[in-house]
Amino acid sequence: MSVVVIGETMINLLWDVKTGRVESTLGGSPAKVALCLHTLGRKVTLITCWGDDQAGQLVQNYLSASQVAVRRVPSSSSRTMVGLAYADGAGPHPAHYQLMSAWDPLELPLDHNITLLHTGSLAGVLEPGVSRVLEACWRMSTRPGAAVSVNLSTHPFRLPTTQSHLDAAMRLALLADVVTVSDHDLKLLFPDQQPLESARDLLGLGPQLVVVMCGASASFAVTRDHEVHAEATRPSDVDAVAAQDAFQARLLDVLLGAAGGASVRIPNAFTTLKEMLHRCLAAGAEQGEPTR
Picture 1 (cartoon, rainbow, N blue to C red):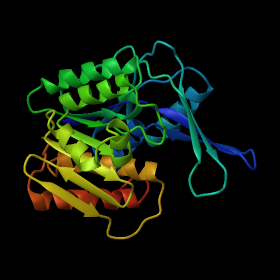
Picture 2 (tube, rainbow, N blue to C red):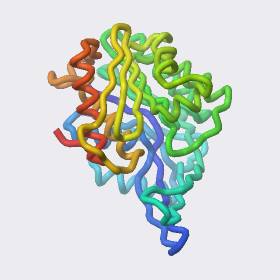
Picture 3 (cartoon, rainbow, N blue to C red):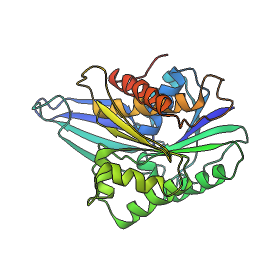
Picture 4 (cartoon, rainbow, N blue to C red):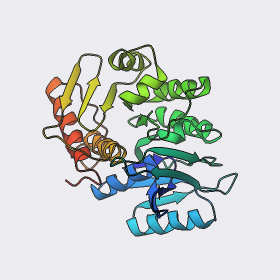
């Protein structure tokens, strides 16, 4: 049994506007989640695409060094997604982000032995790739014993919330067993509602569990029977993006359980949900790849 993560792999270029120095890092929430799961000892394959360009060579180098299993699929543009982050020195985190997007896989093949499919982030929003992501989720949703997890957050890239963006998010939620989203992204999707009300609306579309990340310090979960809130046990001033990726990876690890991922276990008991949120927040506080 195994986990497949589908989504963008990109190069983030951190540009210090005062010194002119540029630093490259591996980006893309799905890719980072896959790397975290690999660190946790899970059998995970990242299905992604990148171009045969200089940015793509950096992607290949980063992924090869990580030793995570990667299935590179062809894309229509043969371009690598690049994110530009501009730091002005006024705070610990970049002040502005710019996305040069290219999420256009031509195929997203799924092996027969997959236990859990996780996707989302920019891959769940950007056309033309989102149509293939939705198709893959639908194929997984028809498999007995398999589960679909989606992340509706696109942070830190402040994409305009168009009707197509909202439609894609709702269609992903309809196919998902578990939905993860940040409170910020919920506000973008549902500007006239409070996060808890929006989470309940998402739950009404069909998922068994909706988990909302409130920065790196708090979270809550809703199921048919429970509403559970949790706060981090210690204050943590960390990169919110890295914290959310680590939080997401730990959540998937919890869902797979201790039986080697033989089945996906979606908790519903209050105490189990509370423990799950605290474990995820602790992983996020580490701001990086969580360890067992």
